[in-house]
Length: 439
Image (tube, rainbow, N blue to C red; front, side, top):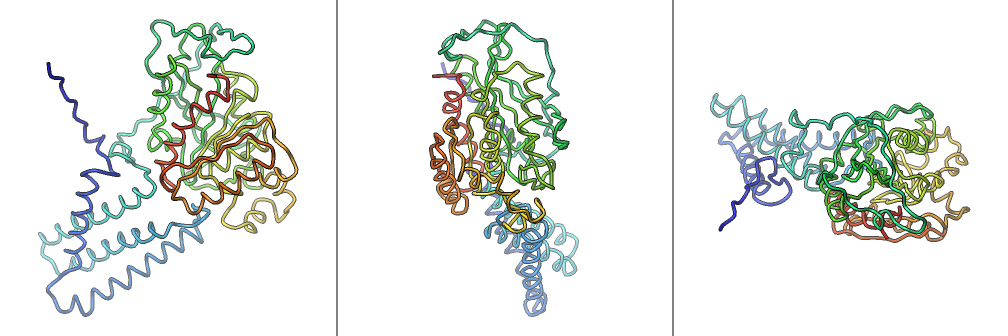
């Protein structure tokens, strides 16, 4: 008997590989050529040179604005992304300069060609970071946030004898859900005064048990620019955690994706500084709120902090500056020190020029004179990440010198979401062993 094949819907169409990005490339390049070519002699001698010069100039201004004024990326806009932004600018200017010479049908075609060329160039940038893997992950009204976290009643707790792991005493009860559940929660900055965006919390199936296991907690952070929703979209958090839970009879850590930024492009340095008190938020407000509102594991061994890029640097910072809270960390593609773009700018703007204040919380400075024999960590980077990979190697060496139990992991890719979602999936068994969930 043949089985029916379930075809993927449009929302599942990949933007990174396969027929759709190929079609976008063909249509986008053809559209760009159509916009470039015209029969008028004046187009070739006057207007096209003007368009090309203007496009190059505007693309350069965009790069300067991003790197020197806006500064959403501490290390600057990647060159390839700047080139594709230039292609977008070129397509728009070609359309605008062509419109006066076209009739209404030609004008409509020029607009369509511009849209296709911009879509192609924009998706090339997307392929570099892999922020939107499918059509359904694109921003839009179809993106409905998870429901607000319902704080339920306390349940009886599953007792775990000394020397045993949760997995060794856990027996999956009947009626347990097959998958975990996402919810949003506002975690206030009670001690820090930090105004964070809503956190996203994933509760594993085992949390629904009437005899509830005290599950460990993973605090997960996005990069900058970024938001907690990045992990449920590009990071495919649900798929990763549901897969882990399915292979462990519903057991998995609770995951709280929290906001260390306070806004899409805010660079808070993840420190207590003149900018904000984010270290206090992550070391006090977040764990205290979770422990008060959810039944979770206690003690530093049950708490892991993890993140990517800015969030990876932040995870190392908390592991070093709040080791009494977090017993393990996962630093994916992090930096060798928190930065606003340069060391001098960071110290001046965040600490009023006080180098000693910066050194007191900068991980490499702290580890130079303090040991952390009870802290475990994973340093992870993409094989093709020429910027953050070497910085991770430097951090790894410092962690080893500080007595940490650390490993360095390479994942195929660059500074992109494929590395980070693969990294979390790959290291989840390691996290489970560190926090006492499994042996």
